[in-house]
Length: 179
Image (cartoon, rainbow, N blue to C red):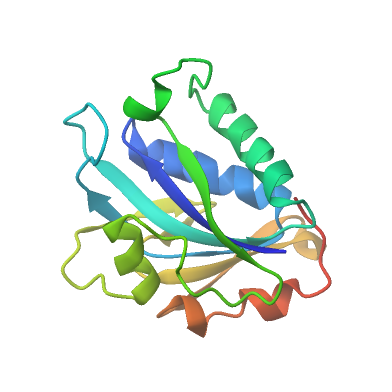
């Protein structure tokens, strides 16, 4: 199953988004990452700005199983999910499944937040972008497909692109297994 995911952080966001992308690459051999943009908090009791991005991954897990995996990732990076008010507080990382598809084609129907909608539609020209360094590669200014090449000793290969629909992540992941 293909998953369109939203990533967000407003506690040390430059560090925590890098950590989240790195963790995602540990369990998925490839992923597509949108530009990373600065956003204002919405529906949360804070003044701290966020960094947000979209990611696409392939996983044999069901949506419920993958969400459990993402919750574990969030907790490993410091989010207290046992707090009943955690959804209204600052967070080191938030990973949400926005949409899933067997074909890898997304319609954007699960995207409610306007910043994720802009990223999905490729309308980021008026957004302030952030740069992240993952395994020595600068990401965040443009969309990128990131591959983990196990034959080359876990080397990271990055292909920069323009938009979700321009990327090779689907072709490169066909037949691969991951979480």
